[in-house]
Image 1: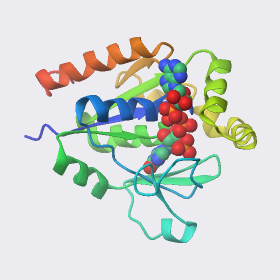
Image 2: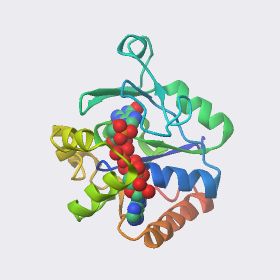
Image 3: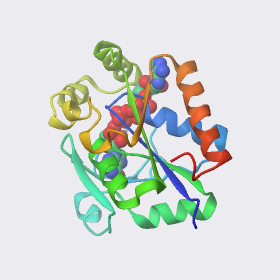
Length: 192
Ligand SMILES: Nc1ncnc2c1ncn2[C@@H]1O[C@H](COP(=O)(O)OP(=O)(O)OP(=O)(O)O)[C@@H](O)[C@H]1O
Ligand SMILES: Nc1nc2c(ncn2[C@@H]2O[C@H](COP(=O)(O)O)[C@@H](O)[C@H]2O)c(=O)[nH]1
């Protein structure tokens, strides 16, 4: 029986998914599955580290476990990416929108540990995006997208499957993550 798990980190834009994934990498040595996108890099983002940055033509040549359009750009993740991660460690993480998280829950069952992050204060969330350095036009486009609105709520398909963490205070988020990971480290099966 395999004890491989993928921690799927999902939630609204700016809720802290990448920050959580980075924390799991730095504190628990969890490899991050790198996904593919046609969006252009943000300042400081690197190809092969943050994403595989694709053109629409190169994106279309890959084989995806799931792929979505989010605020006008395409994103996709592959089974090969998961397999490569699991070769390095039994616990890995991936950052997905909620549609992707629903697909992972369906396709991978208990192998996917879903974490849904929420930030109840919308204004605080938008301020985080500005502080992150996102261009105002990009923020406005994203906030106007149907995906942005959809991801504000835990999808019906994840109710009862996802661990919901309110990411207001980072110290509390860290504590919730530490508790969750400890459960899986103790006994990966009983934590389901
Ligand atoms: N608890 C927190 N308190 C304050 N700022 C935070 C907290 N968690 C994350 N941030 C900051 O909020 C910003 C957005 O976080 P992050 O990039 O991780 O979000 P995301 O969910 O991956 O966003 P996106 O979906 O747009 O890529 C970052 O600048 C990050 O440092
Ligand atoms: N379903 C998928 N969602 C993905 C994938 N890679 C990233 N994402 C999600 O897209 C949005 C936008 O990302 P951003 O980096 O432009 O802010 C965010 O919710 C990501 O979690 C993927 O392969 N599949």
